[in-house]
Image 1 (cartoon, rainbow, N blue to C red):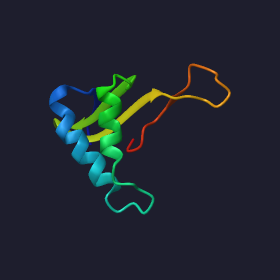
Image 2 (cartoon, rainbow, N blue to C red; image 1 turned 90 degrees about the horizontal axis):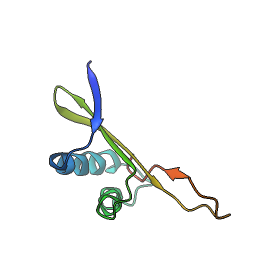
Image 3 (cartoon, one colour; image 1 turned 45 degrees about the vertical axis):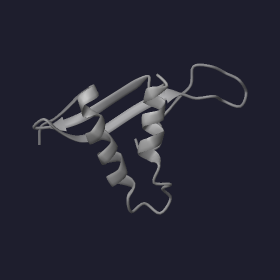
Image 4 (cartoon, helix red, strand yellow; image 1 turned 90 degrees about the vertical axis):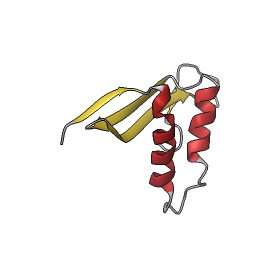
Length: 84
């Protein structure tokens, strides 16, 4: 197994969406909208980091983080959107 990590590219978006949807397809806690949440965060410019894992150029994983609000108002916190 030779897995490499890299930043996502625009051409990766369909594969990322399919990967997230497939990952949550059978999950009892899933809303089945996880891929749409990640896409909305991306479109809003709120994915601070978005990486893909590749094996032989195939996307086999995805992770991203986005800023989150904390109830006490403290700043500088990040969360992992659903589907990651």
